[in-house]
Image (cartoon, rainbow, N blue to C red; front, side, top):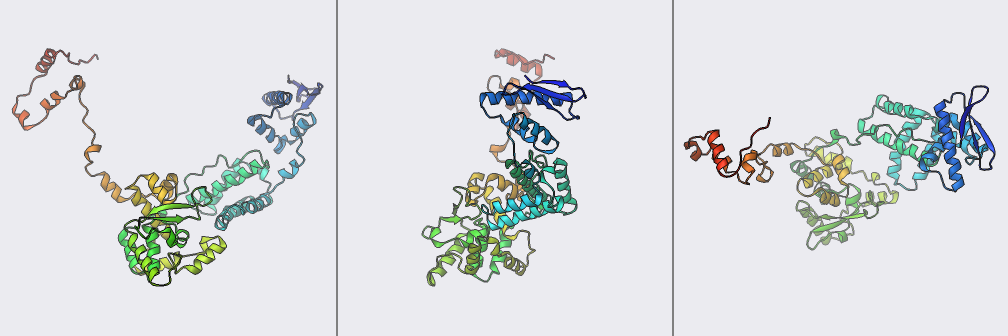
Length: 454
């Protein structure tokens, strides 16, 4: 048993018998309260008990021991080591001095082997924010929850970023420091309690109707461009990667029912490298035109032959951002006399997902378009004026709520009394029965009228 007492100088101490059956003493800091001393005593008892049983510490106790190596508790940790309660950490001082700059460079170097180059570029943006705000020489062990809150304010006030972007940067910061926790560089994640909220930006969502996209298709100079836009708007494909990787062997050119789409964005998820997409009626004419051209000339492996240079460059760099088709697409939108909408290709895919979700179950649509229902609701599905117009129309019979009947009309499973009181031409000609006569008639049938007990 560990006991708490006070020495001659008024400082609290914890005394206990170690595994060697010798009495040991740990002197606590002057700032330690009676409650703190009792906590130390209980934890020492748990550690000794687990060592006797030769069992590892529970997660809660292990995390508590880990906190001893950070901040002012470091001296206590050294006393625990000297008393034989815990193992020493020879690199503890080196870890406590790991800086934001050092850990950030190491973080990017490690993840550069797992993610695509485009993703690594996206990681670089929040890393730059972390370095600018905290400084590259600040030890990550010195960053607390208050600093994390200040970082979020910095993104809003100084960097003037949108709310969705701030949420994404804070999500990355949480992952960044979680990696430090898992490597035991810090005891807790300072960004654990920082709100991240939604990463969607509804202001940048635009529904591109069919009439507008047809105007753009009509001004396109080639069949490949017309098919590319149709694959995005009517097929829901991600531009540029998925259309540029589409091969004729992936398209059912006999019955024109289905096509196999290869998705570099989701290929790192098991079973999500490819998906089967219907050849929708709106899309089929553009595919058939491209097929006829491919048969007339030298038959090509790729469905879109005009983008060979961009395809080779992107595949070599493993970065589809190099195949920038948005700039030319914007020119076609201007040529059609339309106002350029944000995220020109993404909103075509978003518009298609919104249309399909109104017709088919959401799990079917997400399987066709290669995302999840959660992602679709956050970043793709839109609420349109047509939804409001449909909602205020007379609902179909299946959705009409039946009128609630009085209890005395349903006791015998019939509603003849309701029909008797209904305002029909026949009943209008009948004299209205008094309440007393209706009660007498009901008593004659063997049912007592329902009376209030209030």
